Amino acid sequence: MTPEEFVKEFWLLKESDVNGALDFNNQRLTSKLVKDMGLTDVQHRQLREVLDAVLTDALYTVLLGLDGEANIGERQMPYRIYDEDNNELTGSGDIEAYAYEYFQEKGRS
Image (cartoon, rainbow, N blue to C red; front, side, top):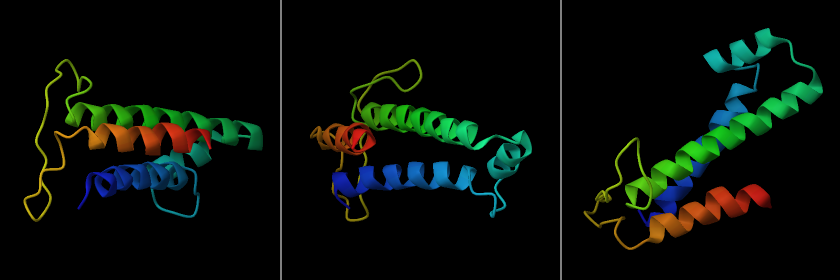
């Protein structure tokens, strides 16, 4: 796994969670809670934007934190993450760069 693939998995998770929370045809608790709110179409779109922004901020911060570039909670320190072939994914700044690409640039396109 490359740093880009690692970051992309987080981005795909975010996309899946936002879409899943707003899909009333699945069994997720978030879907039921949103459905029970009885939102209008406008409110539904606004909630999608809020959920997307919250998850973007949280996952982007976690990724930067794993690369030692942001706090996770109250601590800022570099972590070491290795893929299944024992290749280190952290330490080069690639996670930070790809996190920006996926979570900041994709969000504006």
